[in-house]
Length: 326
Ligand code: AMP
Ligand code: MG
Image (cartoon, helix red, strand yellow):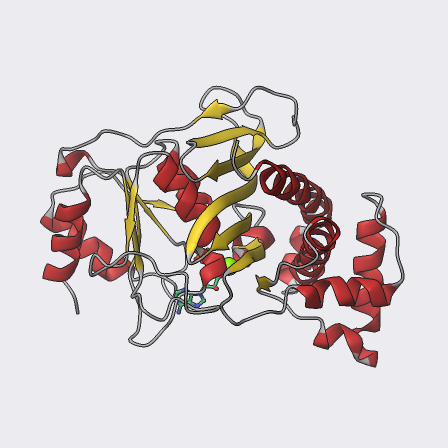
């Protein structure tokens, strides 16, 4: 199988990061939330990036990583207390090292320029969902010559399936080899192949979008829903878990409609999820129908928003989006 070592390394790294995220999230209380204490997500974000970059460095020392975080804030005296919390959380999953090493691992993920082979990482996508104890994702992808070859999504709070109350899904894809998932904490469970829906009747569509109306326009999606006579209420969910929702047929499409001109989507907010949906038989483009372009460095400078569907309805959705463009 192609990219076997890359895939196994990425899966292991995401599983380990997810353990830390879960442990940090479990300590969030309603009181800390009421005090608007955002420190848990910051600690988990840095810890997740440090662990994943550490593993990537061990196995693929030459690969750059375009990640969301940098360690500059941790290297100054005011960052020392945070750094200590990160070190402690990582030691709980068996990674013990000097604080400085954690900063170095985090900064391994500080690349921003395009290169022929690189990884992109969002150590916690959906930080608001993480704080609310709702959905968030750890997203990691390998991009070679602008093409996503491996995509991994760790979704610690997604239901394992429709019938049990268990949560935690690990989803992945290697280009050309389908999209798969497995319970996050059962690495030996048989992977289950996932597929998008076949819904073709526009009025039957179930779409998902951001919880945050600042990340995707709810007004615009409302106009599209009315136009197509979509009668189901949208699923509002944080993070790239929306990609998993489309890939495995929980929803038919995911709309990300720009809230302002000029915002450039970040590659780490999409790359992992995009390959999982494509390999599940879906279609991905920006709102004008242009393919997602991962060859411009850390942002998707050639794209506007994102449209993710089961493929069947893609052209009709793009038309409806453009009909109602503000
Ligand atoms: P979501 O959880 O789908 O709402 O997306 C979370 C991601 O939205 C974060 O990781 C940010 O990188 C990204 N983001 C921040 N500001 C914007 C914006 N104005 N438009 C679209 N995405 C944004
Ligand atoms: Mg993100």
